[in-house]
Amino acid sequence: MSSPSPADAPTPRGVPHPALVVRTIALPTARVADLLSLLPEPEDAGDVVSWVRKGEGFVGWGRVATFTASGPERFEQAQEWWRQVTAEAIVRDDVDEPGTGPIAFGSMAYSRRSGTESVLVVPEVVVGRRGDLAWVTTITTDATVPAADEPLDRQPAPQGPGAVEFADLDLAADRWAEAVDEAVSRINAGDLDKVVLARSVRATATRRIDPRWVLARLAYDYDTTWVFAVDGLVGATPEMLVRLERGLVTSRVLAGTIRRTGDDSHDLALAGSLARSSKDLEEHEYAVRSVADALAAHTSSINVPDSPFVLHLNNVMHLATDVAGVVDDDSTSLALAASLHPSAAVCGTPTLLADDVIGELEQMDRGRYAGPVGWMDASGDGEWGIALRCGAYESARSLRLYAGCGIVAGSVAADEVAESVAKLLPMRTALGG
Image 1 (cartoon, rainbow, N blue to C red):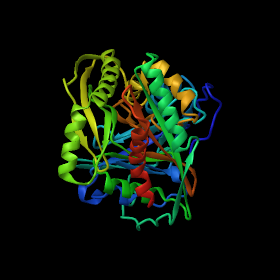
Image 2 (tube, rainbow, N blue to C red):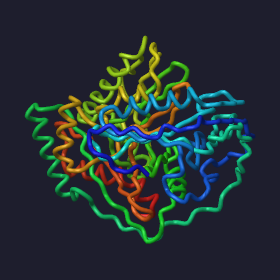
Image 3 (cartoon, helix red, strand yellow):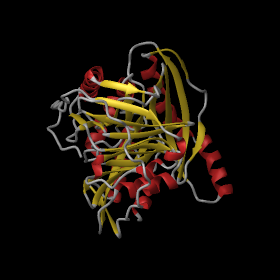
């Protein structure tokens, strides 16, 4: 897992030597029917990677190369490192699809001031599946091309963490509610339009928390999300910050939330009220505008739907909009993610002012929470979500869980506390709490 580094001090490390040797071969899809079940038990929670949604995506294990950086240039430094690595790699790719060949999994710190490093990880083994295609990629630093014959047997089911206790960190719920009230006062005074405030909770287990246990439960309970693990950050995000595939860029914007009750007829009525809520529509409009404006600088055309739809997840419903465009420069998926970060969905509007308010009122370092998380291949194609509904390993038996809420003029502190509780539920449930 990443170690802290001084704030605002760029500290790029990890250029591998000698060159990576990469081999990708096709597999029968039957061999990878359940990607997460293929993960071997890791010695360290940070040694598994995952990017899985509805049975498709990637899992990986081991490490061939790791890059870390902090400070304002962390995105540029990570991208330059990856370009250098892939330019020197020796590659044999029998599949030649997005995500095959050399691939890095990344998790970037939310803030340039964060004491947590951003990280790119190149695993030893990556197993992928998309539709009717499945493959395995092995990566080494040996002088000969690997055979890509890594065994892909279903692993024994991981053990649960036992009893888990949860405790507020930084700001307890009542003090966080006071921060929400202060934010609303500043918005009503005209200082800013929106700010996203987050809180954190520590989960402490009686036994080791196996990341495979957490991932499997998240995938089962929240199959419409991207279930991720990168360097000790695990979670299930519903929000695709950016996807780049062969020149087409897409971004799913989520802002405006209501908790589900479990009663289908009642939830349908709640979805209708969410779609008509002026407070939530205002919050959503800010988020969509920030994404569209950022992507416009990199695209020849862009499509922004006139109105959002309601995305139904197991625990909450969100207002959602899918933005799409055609990239007309040489931007990689990571560069596009950098141009979008932080969006109004995780920061606020105007961005710089909202970010300052976050630093003042939250009273915590978000680390890699609310930062981009995902993957990128040698061509620059990739997918980057926002690290939401997640937890960061603090030790083998402890995770720091995060949740945030968008605050606008109509926000009520008690409602925002309830929303944060709903957003903590996926990780609490995955841990057995």
